[in-house]
Length: 350
Image: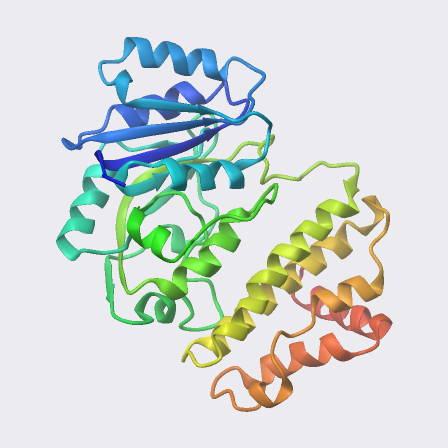
């Protein structure tokens, strides 16, 4: 496909009438002097979101750069993002959530570094805010980092998994990504209702050979109580929703089976098992409002280590942590869950 634009900004849209104008104008009012395509996927919005987008496209000087694709059925943000990857006409792709917004110099900063270093991915830094604009400090240092140029096989993955702690965010937003790179490695989102970013980034990071991480804040992540990623204040959670979470993080931990030859596999294993421990503790914490109630066997199976014992015994780092997770996954279900509860209380997760 001939690339008609320097950058495609992809925005999935579903019922965000309160936020979409600010989001869209932030994409249109960039200082970048190249060509930007703004690709909107209307995921069957039922509010005034599309009316607002149509008005902006008709009145803004760059409104003709807005392309709209209407989904026949509501299919979720993962499917919308896959369609963006398929239809984008830019050399680079930038995902923007429809309730967030970017700084005026966002694309200029990311694009210039992509071109200078011929990088496959460029990460900008993120500021978290409330809908009223108040800045929130959520204590995640990886949202803003010093400048890092990571070149060579596994350089990004070695940075991400330098130890058992999180060093690289698993968000799809605020990353400028080469379209050819995405398509060459067939990187796509799963058909999940939430956290498809985690799945996508699990596949992305091991493939990257040229990456740049920047301290420049180029993205405002708006934390709102009615977003798909917020579940506080719920009175009932369906078991099917819990099963999606387990399926997602099972995929992430099982990805380690393809990475046993990598020098960061031991750290990635303990990191992904820790993520699953957080998920299971979250399930246990809300067990009384999950319908039907998850079984001990289900939770024990979620904690099964993806690798065989003989592989873990060869680890140079985090051998004992991985062995502990392995043991939790092979204990009888009732004992396994009792062990998880004990650990969860010690770690203040329960």
